[in-house]
Image 1 (cartoon, one colour):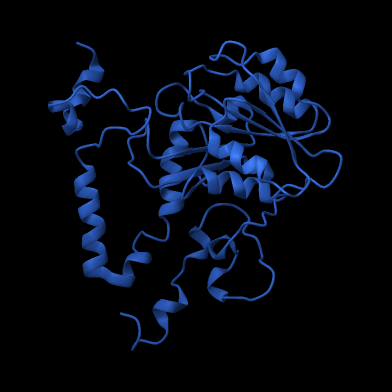
Image 2: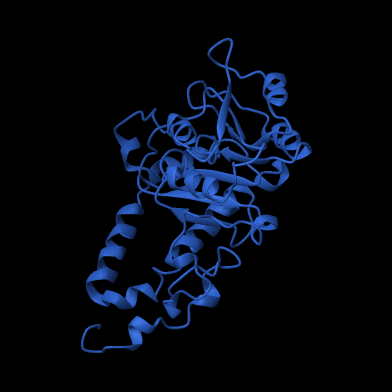
Length: 279
């Protein structure tokens, strides 16, 4: 018997259903109900203490778990609300005002990614590589489109419309050859085909919790190669990206050195002050 069949009992819906739509929403693992109850129990019994008892760290602790699946290291993957936010964060760190202002993608990239690229008003120009057969994207044509004017290459590892697997390693090599960066959408590949962001030479990767990771709706993730940590300055940013968030400093942000929140977490001031207002 195939050893994978031993996992069937971990997915309740398979007891009564032939489930053939994991490419859209993965079947719910049996233990998910317990995890959701655990979250509700923490909120109802621990209240604001839950932040320092796990909630604050979850964007990176969950990110580290995903990192094990996609070949990323500790502190290199962080959770976000969805892929659109991840893509927007990447774009906000890039300058498209010069001659190097091209975004190269395949015409079969997921629509939300293309919507974001088309909406750029900062000088970026989008070039998409078409498919001849409605299934594949010619590798030679993709490589040819990437030139010295390219700032960012955005490709799907597995194309959502056809399941065609693109050679992201070859595409990444070409991007780096001309000085461009590359982001791969691995939403349709992580959890079903081997993914190694480091071996592929990716600068960024995005994906989410729905499909083959069976994490349910509601979360995206962003991988950033550590060699870029010190140079990226995203304009789409926020409080938790500050090196010292609990200083509550005003003015320009002091960017954190990486995605890890560990050194920032001692005991947040909002748990120490105003005992009459906070439990």
